[in-house]
Length: 237
Image (cartoon, rainbow, N blue to C red; front, side, top):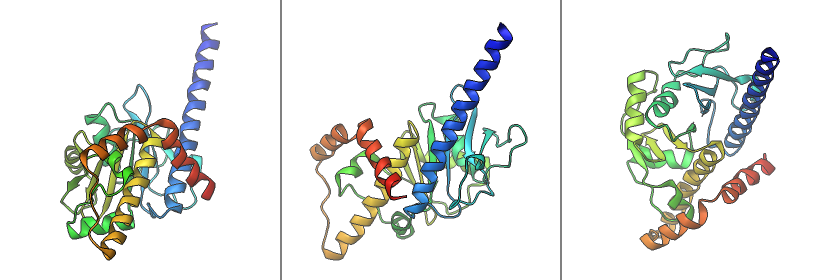
């Protein structure tokens, strides 16, 4: 009986991991379609109750992802069960997970519009309601591939308790409670940058007032509204 229970538990765990991988495939594919990641982006999810994560492998083709492209690794980047190696910047993800037990998903994007701002040292501002959910956007001023533990620690420290950190002239890192939340914030970051840039061609965009930001945070950080962003991009992709 105990053997049968153990096998059933193992099957449930395997099914849950496969479902989580499928969700990550969808998230990455939608971000690639929206040009928020390119050939080098990566999305991860913490495997609950462990010091392991799922992340797309370094060799994965971001425009043609499959479930098997997502691999299980520990926080030192060691693949489990002989799987392919993770991307060399896995340290971004592992060090955030070590520092932030509240974070269950991390994405490193290479967005066009918001990276323009970090290239110029120009801050993104809360010019649309969705920007309220990004919180205070942090900045990591070194331009480098985050391919060492020490650099991952620096990025995690720059992020602190926030949701978004911009890597100067490189991209963005977003961390949140789950895959859907992290995906929606990646979209909101790029949309904020795009609209701020376009508005600046017309005049000087106005920041939302503190009370407007608070109302937006209260009204928009809801599961069905975040899922609405996911469903919109899923239908387009």
